[in-house]
Length: 119
Image 1 (cartoon, rainbow, N blue to C red):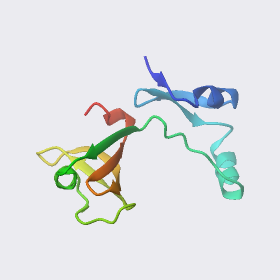
Image 2: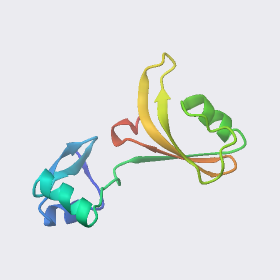
Image 3: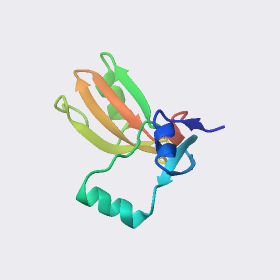
């Protein structure tokens, strides 16, 4: 059974077409793609990312570990920097694309796709 995000009831109340995605029931669209595109260009839009996975890596070897599992270079990154890259299997296959935030010295916050949380 798919999970619901904290915004599920609001999406349904606003008439979203809901569909399974990464183990969650997520909005696919509301009225139509053109109307949504124009609304974002003329006003603003919200994208529900509450289904995404979150991992915190801390400790004296945190940077070394992130360097090992992530394709982008985080060595010596300034605090507050965000990197986009890949996490790979030992054979080079892709586990996931993800964001890595440097929160502090030896403190990293990873945002991963919902479908890959268990990996």
